[in-house]
Image 1: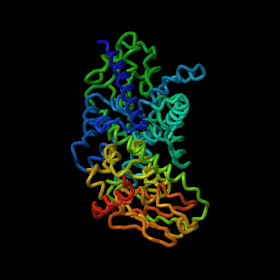
Image 2 (image 1 turned 120 degrees about the horizontal axis):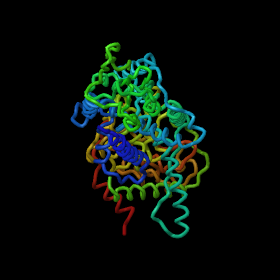
Image 3 (image 1 turned 180 degrees about the vertical axis):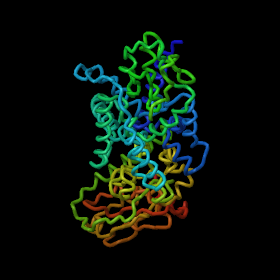
Length: 521
């Protein structure tokens, strides 16, 4: 039976899936609905495992589905569902079109079992000991996420900004300018290291990364040894032409012995399309040779548009307010933030660090760009995990996007009312840095943008007013810190809560009164 259609289906399916994941990570319009994220992330192995481990919910059983598929078909996850694996296939295919790189041919590779199982052991140790930095460095989905978010997305945004500038000259405003804060060099270096490593290995050795470094591939490879369907070679009809070996990107077909190391096979089905005598089979069990001199061999070792526009308006308003204040470097008191601000829904910094794999999907989805990859804010354990950076943006009062897209449950989804009262930190006012004190001028940018009116203005002197913080109703969103114009230090900043608290509900009467005073018409 000719099974070449399996390859065509794999190429089509995996291509669509890769495009979907790229869109999820590079989308800066915030228009993709939550259901799309849920569907796409359900069958990502490590995020699903961590979600199930933390919340024990049906939404986290995707990894079980993957195991079942693996026990039936083999490592279909690696070729059909893993975005990093599919990216390697795209790189391999593309580079084979370059004349200088055509010399790199696929050949049988001896299994580096010590390396495979070493990385798997290290991953399991990190998973159960709380060393999430190890998990995030080895999880293929998170690696792809950081590449897409940290390398591809900035290029797309820069292209958008150039095109938006050109269109605006013709008074066409269908595109808008998007600001992105550059990642810390260390975070970018990690992403660059992996994309270079994966590219080199893909060009020279096909799927060697999946069969030596990736712990998911190694684990699924172990299960593949007992899978129902396996690729095997009919030794009675095989002519040893080596065509199947030359297209095997996993390097697991050994023609001299006419065997397939199915623990390393990624089910790309390339071999099924090239065999001229149909000796390569995808059958319920490996075929046995009819020769009496040979024994049967085992497999080898192995939020919608309206909210978005409202957010854009808030950012532009805050930026305008900040740009209108021309201040000198009179802020002399350094800001000493002792606890980083973790995303709303993360419950506590400790719980967040234990569950987050630093895939950066929430960073890509955040409409105000307040979520940024951490450097040393969380320490080594939280390297590259999202942290709120109020120099880049603020946490929008009416947004729960990070909780909607988080695949591991590190950021739990809060309903909007819960989120509006979740105190992720508390604003601290540094009087000595405020331009009301240093320059004797009005400001009030922090109070204007505070959604709960926790920051409000009180009399100071010479008919001036100065900010004051009501810590009981402050939720630590950073809407006060972001527009603060003082340099080089802020006059108001958010000190994170190690464990998130519940803020008191703001007095709506006072809020309405203040709004009427600001907008009497």
